[in-house]
Length: 586
Image 1: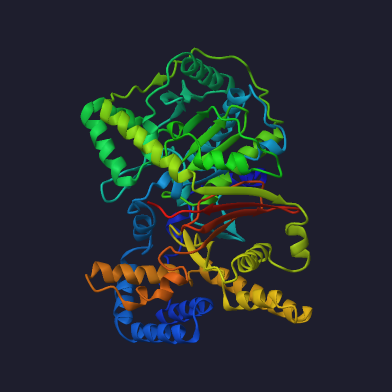
Image 2 (image 1 turned 90 degrees about the vertical axis):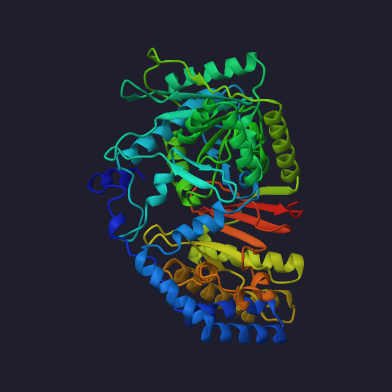
């Protein structure tokens, strides 16, 4: 990271944006061929033949017309998927997004200089915030290194959405507002919001043109905490962001109608760099077991999180940290990048501030006191009740596997990520006695505003290997042969998906073209095998590699009785976050 920062003086963070290639539209024939392969593990012979006929009919009929329309759209837009994906995957979704869409994770500082310790919450918080604000300044000055694969630059647009970004609820569709500007683009908000015991405060992190120091930030946080601990709790307006989206939109409209100042205060939260959450919880955590703190990060007190913010930094009373982030504006690699940066800075400084303790004469934080009435308070109570009810349906376990890690798998010439994906398939097969349709994230950042594609890890080859592992009569040689076949298939799929040759987003585009043209839903998308194999967001296993760094992450499953599985792979260990959703949403 340091070497990259040194080199970055030659490059600006966003300088390659205009020269990135457009997102391609895959071949219809190739996408449908890959789709048919992906449904095989979930069909008997008769079901497969029926689906095969449906796919052939689609390819020779309406599919070709939809493909032409999609190609026309791609000529007009550098990323034909971008707006559609944002709407369909995030903004049109009506279920409560804080619990079911957001992602987050605990910080890894506990593994070196910041083990859990009461009384350190504010001091550590001020240092952590200072490092985060330095990262913000790197972004504003465009000095954050461009991510590359070899010499090929990747899209950096999502990094614009990390700070001063917020989702705003709508009756049928939400929107994302982004206030961030680079220095060359002009003024950018420079205040943060702090939430504590149902109350909200804001303060500017710049004073007389200079970033506040940790002692100065500590002064502000201490003022807020003392005030909140010596006075009654606030109404907890933030809990409304955890509601079902249309109910939150209506509650927000009503809140604004009570007093126009309420809108001004909402906009201050929306435009803030981030929300710093002072949480009274003191979750247990060790390097081998992050279960309790991960649960608190994902399902903790909704009155001290703004569920729609792109960045909630959570500070627990025992000096343990985490973050909770809205997924709409960006994908996990953005928060992985800043989390790694902050963790490295804390490690390098041994968790201490060694600069001046001088505190300038800085204005005290401003409290945002909303005008509320009985209806608003009832809405808040209802939001909290549904949030905790749905949170109780989640079970989260985070354990470290320490027998081996990346080093050994690479030594055996096996891709570490594919190793975990196949192990996951075998675990599901052994547990449930059947294949598990699986979503793994592939990044498409080679392309302009590229985000993700779906790798369907449950392949015919993976299932054959799982079956061989369960059959005592299968020789070790045969098991190994089938495993290597499954590895090769998965590695090829990941490469295809990352280079614009996946099929899930393509099929989504074709279905949305049909909808825009007011055509009947093609049979391809109503065929039972479409959803049984995971289509339409029905994957029983929702998985993602966080990376090969000491950064944690967690997300809830897509479906009830499904699993969310985030993991990172280090040289000598793996950390695995498994979330189970036990009940359907009401």
